[in-house]
Image (cartoon, rainbow, N blue to C red; front, side, top):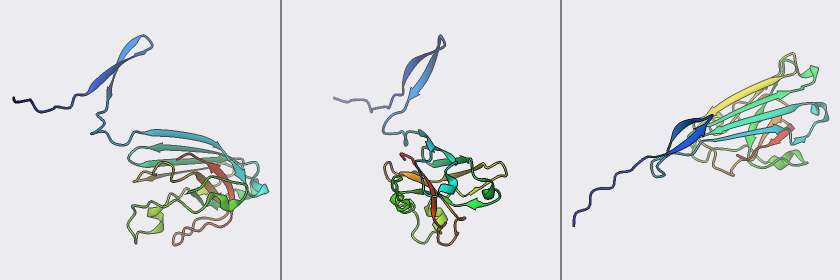
Length: 176
């Protein structure tokens, strides 16, 4: 007996949107890439320097084949205007102690001798006169689920050779 070759079929589901029918294709699991994910977190979770207790953060993460991370911060003290603060994705959750967030998350699939900037997600912020700052980084890779857990704002700009940015001022727990 001869059976025809299996041909993948795209299924469609009908959704009601304001009384109109909308067709949304469902991906075929074997052919689909990573499912996009959106994470929005307001913080900070922990403040490690009282001079920055008025700062509020928002981290927006869009994950698909890449990782798009946006960090906005408001409420910096007037003395911070014009300064640049390092900010990075870290491996562990925020805690009462600054070191609780652990080291920077590093892409385990990065080339061994690649510059540190290509292995990590950096979000350095320059504070505007109104006390606000924002940053965005698009990594060409995806953070493995559960491999990173926070975004930390540091006291100094990121050193491009080492990735160091000094003491940790604020930490926002993010469920990457």
